[in-house]
Length: 310
Image 1 (spheres, rainbow, N blue to C red):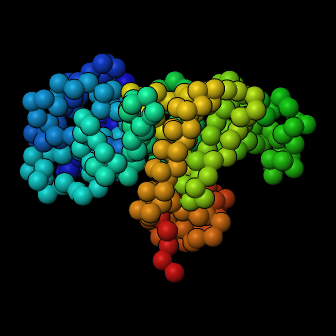
Image 2: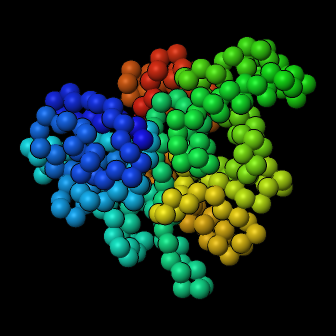
Image 3: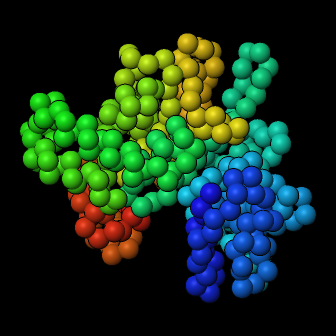
């Protein structure tokens, strides 16, 4: 897996390590300039301290996969960098102990598990990354998914007419190949059929699901959209594909997903791009509407957005 590391004093590094690597192996591969007290990753961020027990944990057991952005916490900043938003994992967590991006699932059988958000990098390809993770557990395949969409659009000029695409078919087919072009409903529908699974998009602000190709496929994956960004949802064992024929379990998963969306919205993580003014935190430009935000991201490369104060 490939991981993007950053830290204090301008430290940045991309490392490639085995899929079964431990935290200890990651820290060795980082060649950090200072002793590492721990790492921070995920959304909202969670912290794992570099102690004797945690150092032997495999990265995938911590919910870390290829493409993850990880911040190294150096020892001289370790104590001051802890935040109330960080939630260390618990072996038997209650919902009160869980961070807002997790929710416990309790089944009538007595089985318990936890649904959680898998943070996807903010780089204008989050839709493709989130679906790639759900299906392949690997976000590096996003360029391939863009090609799938481009070819499908180019080969069906009736379904994907200029009017539907709001630009000439060939121009759109070329545009969606760019790594800074945002995908949306058109691409979700195409990839759903390509994967052979339904895609349930959870709108964090509206607190409801938009289900793509639910009538065609029994299996489904869940991605959550906060108005400007997509993340994947998974169980703590990294299961991302669910089956609606297992009614009790699938309904429990969907209820847990809605609870996560509720808590994250309550914490100010959602944006209503149809109603709210959005600010680019990089250049302070005020934007209105998802299309305005998308165009700004594509033209500038900026991906850090927030809700503008009235």
